[in-house]
Length: 202
Image (cartoon, rainbow, N blue to C red; front, side, top):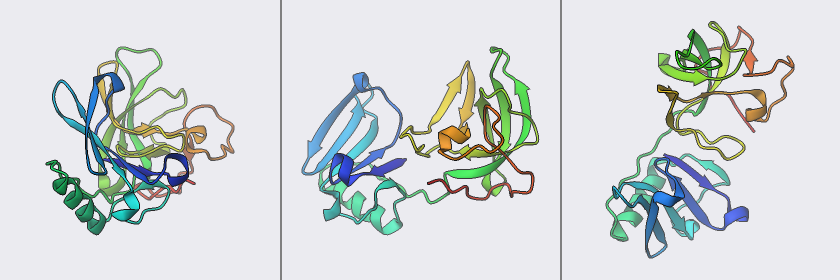
């Protein structure tokens, strides 16, 4: 689940994305100040828009991590509007320092690599990466599923050339940070940083 709020840009609306989908396959239904967005073919809910959000909860501009109390109020509003979905809170960090434990060439690509990358709590994620400088043993920045990049791109589970990919190993440009090494590709961090720690972005 990815939640964003930008009162100056789009008004007093909380946007909640539950899954990726294309606009051509979407439909919507509105009750009160809540719009449910769903895939027309399957009726799967892929998101909600909560208009006049400040009447429900107080949030700041940017990506929103709902507290349990905020999620409770949002879910009460969903039920009151006649919808049946229940939104769950997700407090785990979305940008963390990762360690590339394994890096092998993609069997169906001459530029992609398949990595096994450790993130927080010892979790290992398979992430397909196209950077030319990716290598085993590196400390890197991982945008986990549910992250919102500075340019507004949402990170979801995906597949590249038939290989599952669960997150993204980031470049300095993608993170809007200065790359002091000048090397093209992903941002490689010093070996001294701690795997699993939160990486702060502006």
